[in-house]
Amino acid sequence: MQKFVRFEKDGQAFYGLLKEHDICVLEGDIFTEYTETELTYKLQDVKLLTPCEPSKAVCVGLNYRSHAIEMGMTLPEEPILFLKPSTSVIAANENIIYWPGISRLDYEAELAVVIGKKAHNVPEKEALDYVLGYTAGNDVTARDLQKKDGQWTRAKGFNSFLPLGPAIVTDVDPSNLSVQAFLNGELKQNSNTADLIFPVPYLVSYISRIMTLLPGDVILTGTPEGVGPMQPGDRIEIRIEHIGSLINKVKRP
Ligand code: MG
Image (cartoon, rainbow, N blue to C red):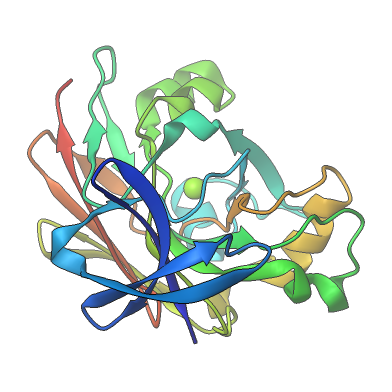
């Protein structure tokens, strides 16, 4: 199991390997070839960046039975897909912006799959070979606009509406991970990826038959029951077993 981070130090971006509270600086690219250098930094002394820079985030709606039921929707026969723009991505500890014109802003705790190599028409049984690792994601949603528009591009596409991080963790079994959301420290979502209607290998294969997935692209696998609103000043934590905690605060612009 390795934990890759991206971070900024003295105005430059680096990839690193997270080891406890130290980051070993890497030379090269985690998606192709890299080597460990002698250089290390303390985690507390750097600014974390998004762990990858996706060209697109492919998201799955209603992928937990419990959430589909809470939204009053019937269970999907095929994955319901939508995209979030690359410009919606923010790093751990950056602020989720409560933009004007929104009256209900929800958190959605999700396991995020990070693609490791170009994937097109990938069979399900080989799908995990195309995955570099996993991180935590928050599919922030303007619920009022989602209902008003009838489709989800605006409601889920604002800048800052896709917190990702803090690290990409490799060699994790995605079929049995607890997924939790804590709002101001209070447990709000508490489920497990074992309850996914469409599991990770199925999703990678299914999506790759529609669009080519590129290294660094992410798949947001859907959120379980317990979604709810956030207010300016709130602190939202998405915690995924073996992967870590993604913490962001909600602010007015
Ligand atoms: Mg979602």
